[in-house]
Structure formats: C-alpha cells, structure tokens
Length: 395
Image (cartoon, rainbow, N blue to C red; front, side, top):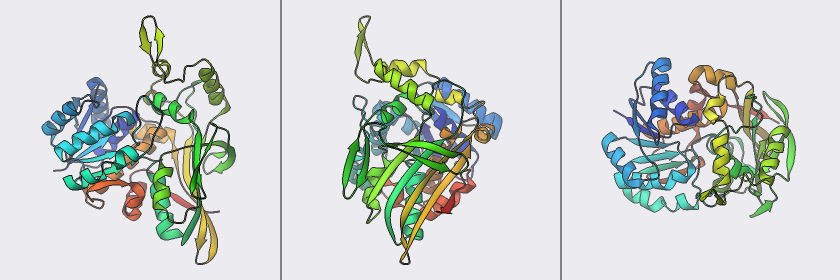
C-alpha cells in the first residue's frame, strides 16, 4: 500500500496534497507535515471537501534531522516529497539516508547565509544514496523539472544535435496587489537580485542583475519582456545535453514589480545580511517576507495565465530546426480545481508526476538524479493527463 510523506504546507504543498488525493491507485496513503500543523490541517480539510479523501497530518521541524527521522519511522512512507524550503534539502536527504526512504524535491539546496543555489551539495550524496539502495529525484517542479524533461525529449526525439536552449518563463497573471511574489518571497527575491549567469562556448558568463532582456511572444499571453537570470536547471542540463553551445534562462517581470524591487533594494530591505534593531539581529529580507502576502493567499481572484517553455535550436536529419516546447496554465482554472494559483500548480503537479514515476518504478534507480537523466516519455505522457498539457511549436 504505497504511502507518501509530504513535507511543506505552502501553496505547492497544498497542490501536491490535492493531486495525490486525486490518484488513489498510486497514492493510497498520504501524510502531510510541516512546522505549523494548523496549516496541514487546513489543507487536509480542503482536500476532504474537494477530493473526498482523508489525509493524515503531523508536525515536524524539517531542519531537525532527528525529528524528521522519528516522523519517518512512525509514518513508514515509501517516498518523502520535499516541498519545504531549499534550505531544508540536505537535512531531509540526511533523514532519508538514515531511514532508507526515497526522496524527491522541487528546488536545489541553498544555504541560508549565502544566496547561492547549485547542485554540488546534493550531487555529493550520489554514492551514499546508491549504497543505501534508495533514489533521490532532484528538481521535480516546472523549472527546474518539466523544462529539463522538455530538453530531454528534444535531445532524444526531436533533434540529432542541439546548439542552443533558451528557457522562457512568463507569468502573465494579475493578483491585484501592488507588490507580491508568486512563491516564497525570500527565495524569489534572493534569486532575482543575484548576478545573472549563462553558459556559452564552454564557460559560464556572469552579468549584472537584470541587465539583459528580450521580448518574446508567449503562447496564450502575448509579447512580454523577459530578463536573463541564473537558474539551477542550467547547471545540470550543461552536463546532460551533449554538444550544447549555449543555454540561458529568462523570466518576465512587469515594470511595477521592478520599480518596487529597485526601491526595496535601495533602502536595504532585500539584503540577507543581519542588522541590529532594538537589541536584536534581524535579516531585512526575512522582515520583508513577513510584510508581504503569503503566496498561497494570492490564488482567489488571480486572473491570467502562465506560459513556460524551452526554445531549442539545432539540426534534425541534416536540416536546421527550431522548436518551442511549452505549457500554458490558467490561474482561475487551477483555483477552481485545487484552490491554488498557477505558479503553485505548475510546481506541484510535476512533483506529483515525478512521485508517481518513482512509486510505479517507471523511474527507479538508486542514486541522485536530475530529471533529464531519466526516460522522458512516461513522465510527459502523464503530465498532460494530470493537468499540464504540453505542445511543440515549430518556429
């Protein structure tokens, strides 16, 4: 009787709980845990009301390995789905190693005190997971995640040689707030205030934050300006797409969002360096996070669509080819289905599909794996059925 332990009760955790509940053949028992049990209970009530299924809840501090090990031993899950914060990836992987339980996450590890996100820390677990006979699936969200699988599909089916990849992420939605982030504000703002970085001609090129942009006509949304950022899937795709000459990542931001971000940065509120305030140390960005809306609260009344895909150029049968592989997701539709906005939905659904691949053994190999290292066909076949249809547009 397959059982999953979901850790994290934010917007994505709610989507994962709902989508697992919709699929009782694979997810027969579901336990949802986080630091605040009341959040888990609220999601469980919603799942019962909408999906008609009971899920169990528990409290756990995901930073505490011993506490997580104790919960795993009580629950006895077949898989731990980590939709907590990226800071907690390593403690949760340690707990899985101690209990010999498979592991899945949606974003790579980054330390709290440095806004640096890369796979080296998690790749260092490869041998230990292999020796323990358990599997870790890294980055089973949308980007990273689905975008990696789109690239694998292009590599294996659509092209003989791939020259360039541009991953393009557009949220064309409107949540009605002057300034809010669509996922954890601390992670979101840390990500976009760092230097941009892309890979070209065998080396990494670093640029000033938000200093390069392009305008792209996103299916379902229209023309939007996107800015070059560094994003974690670039690091693994460089390793796993042979012959690649260049890979970049772009994300859209509206002018109002950028103006707010610039002002907040100028007054120091996006800093992660602790400051002294009334006798105690506070991190400005953590204080800003407390002032901003919870991303999960944005879902009701959110309008518009997300449009995310991979623009890939290369050759097939000796001829030049250029395709855009993409998904369009509607905020209002995802709210009706699982009470979530599309940014949470596009991360939560692939986490559930990745979990299904592991539990049904379509993907199961001891060690630590990125998405593009595994067969793309079974994942993509389920992705559309689970709520994220994808399309290939010849350019």
